[in-house]
Image (cartoon, rainbow, N blue to C red; front, side):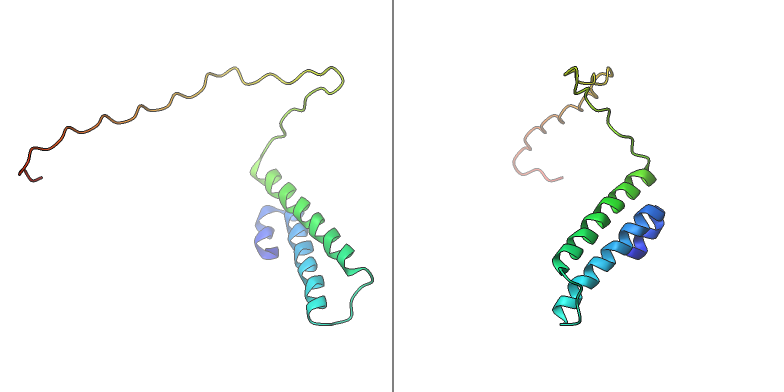
Amino acid sequence: MAFGALRLGPVAALGGFLFLLSDTLIATGVAEWPRLPRPDLWVMLTYLAAQYLLARGALWTLGARAVPRADLTSGSVPAASSAPPTPRRPAPAPRPPRARGSRR
């Protein structure tokens, strides 16, 4: 995870590193190694931060744009796109039944 996140940029790489740190903190509990005080808190903090940074880094790298938010003070909602919907292709016509005894 950490190595693959390097391709997405520094933000995602930091998220990958925190994910690795979160898994290491879990492993210290399984292996009965010395642990930090309140280990569950540290595991969850590093995990949530890793998820946030991975998602943010991936979306930023892939060029995703934020959807405009509704104006909460006026209660209005942003208008939908004015482009017409893409038409669907019609279903193919059914084949006529074959005559008995004929081969294709």
